[in-house]
Image 1 (cartoon, rainbow, N blue to C red):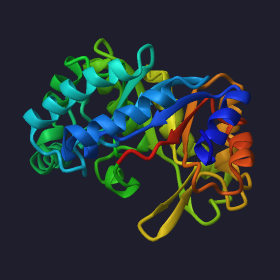
Image 2: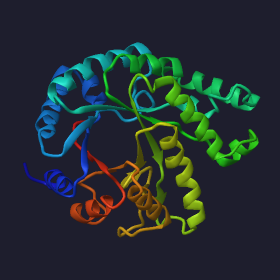
Image 3: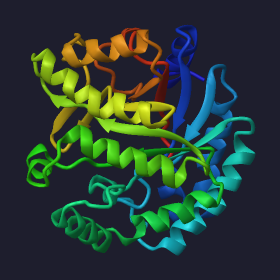
Image 4: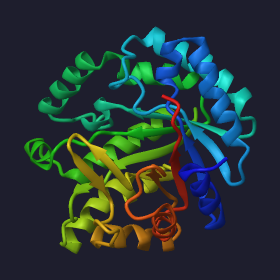
Length: 298
């Protein structure tokens, strides 16, 4: 094997990073048995590489991938989960989910009416991702790890409900652990990116990291996925560090948490590094214990 992915696998392992293959299998499954077979063949070969601990096989399942019917999502999980276990024995299967309803103070029995109305609207818009349906998906046992994005609302919205970001995240993660902590291992996913250079305010960066990283870990999440190292997204480039790459206050905060023992992950597309694959991974290893490496299967 040659090319950027091969180089990334070797370098990430050399640096001591735990490696996850990021291989979204929804599209191959939708395209039919032959396409899924080819995708799993790719995963099978890569999963044998040194340092690979697991496979992330969805990206916000049911949110924007065309899977909108709970029964179809359950079928996908049953079929693909079983086949992935055969293709990558001994490797963890990770299911990535975004659950919009978690942003609406789910564990607060006295939550404001505005939050209750917002939760009902989100269930109507994303019925396939209603909390009860997500519970059913996780009960299928198709993944050892569920990575959950709570999709926090704006600070202005929370202020209108009489709470702040920390309170909202504590509610979201208290509920997440209560609902699913006995069914699966839980990781949090947090969008910590910015366009261009990040904000230079260390205080603002620390507040953001507290809500996005500290709160889930204290609630019981095993790890936090800091999305994302670098990705072209809707006409701009989303980054954690500044272009170069160079550190910023938010990155420094991730490095400090890593040094204190927090388990953090981020994503790298070896075909589109910020600098080089080697220099990017060297910087990632100062803040993260794990890295998702993009695998082209979709």
